[in-house]
Image 1 (spheres, helix red, strand yellow):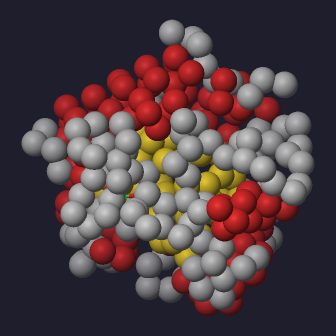
Image 2 (spheres, helix red, strand yellow):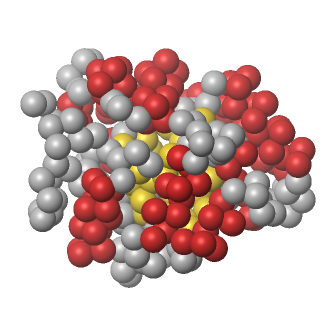
Length: 276
Ligand code: S5P
């Protein structure tokens, strides 16, 4: 079987069993974009303006709604409307980490209303398997209003200097994801994890989506330990979606910048799947 990373988004969408993974792959193909803007903005007005301005060029809009000072019901409504208008998906980068029962309350209900707008969320498995089981229970409950429209990705690696999300922790993310394919559709990682040594054997149809953060066209890092690679490097190393924050929203012209990331990310993808 061809390696996952040399198949096109459409080919992968056609054979993927998870409806949310399919949606991500189809959206990338339809919009010819593998860019995720990480909109780490601190007011609802700035967040929604960013989604409206950059929406046409991205596949996914990534939020940290806990940094939005005036986050409220209208923020949720605005995000949902703009996602429809511009045909993008939403990833709330909440990095759940607590015991299962706490995380269930943080995800569904609660102050941030995350389940109401985020197609995917992420979690660290520092607390063990229970966190994945907990989110799985909520997302797959018959009474859950967004059943089959929500999924989880695992924080398998991090981009910051000195990160402890390495080695056995990363391997355990892969092992756990393989046991929870009804809920886990991929991971945050700096490279493909397809061939890392694991105890379990991947199934023939295994296809976890790779979301890579720390992407920037012009800088190598920041003063707080962030480390960057370029869009091309990230795609060559196996990213399916490239995530950039300040490289896009803090640029002098964010629309020109997102277009440039879209072009570079798409060309690198075409080269990887040999369709250029
Ligand atoms: O390892 C990681 C994982 C994440 S989700 N490193 C990261 O930088 N992130 C997130 O990506 C981080 O929380 C921020 O929202 C974004 C990077 O922003 P940038 O401005 O450095 O591109």
